[in-house]
Image 1 (cartoon, helix red, strand yellow):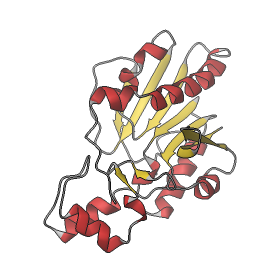
Image 2: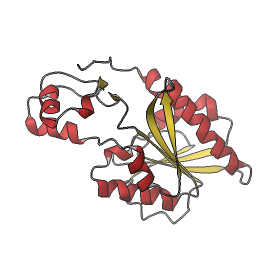
Image 3: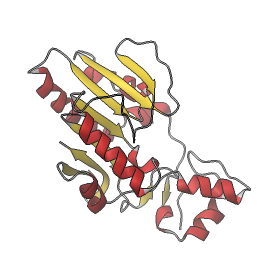
Length: 221
């Protein structure tokens, strides 16, 4: 049986304990950079300033500059951020190792085919001397984009019927099969084996829920 979960507030999205813990882990890497350099340059693939500003209290005293890359960038009037339009799978304007750290939060599952995931992973590994790439775990029972138990494990015809019948979290009910398939194709969750394949030179950290379930996977180098 599917369980509906209410749409989260902005505060819940950007300040929940899991994201705070991720930021703690990320800042350990930032501090390693700042021990050697006077600033840390971060490339955020597919990110927005909302994520960083929601957790600003954790990093505001560090000299961090973030380049945000997105297909549809959202401008921000803050000198700590540079916003550019670009594809996380192909960033030829940047040289190898140009950034101290490449970061991405819940993006790689949205880039489409496996081939695109490979391309994004290669760019993350190429552009940064360090990386921190997070994605929801396929084997966690709650699908994070639909906020529903077991949704991603259902047969495709059942998934399509459900999104054509009711709203789910970030997705509004549709009467169109084409739109239903577009919604279902928006994210393809990854498991530990796939993340290790994408990031063979990194460590895959399991983000635990209740100490039992792996909620997210984080590739770290």
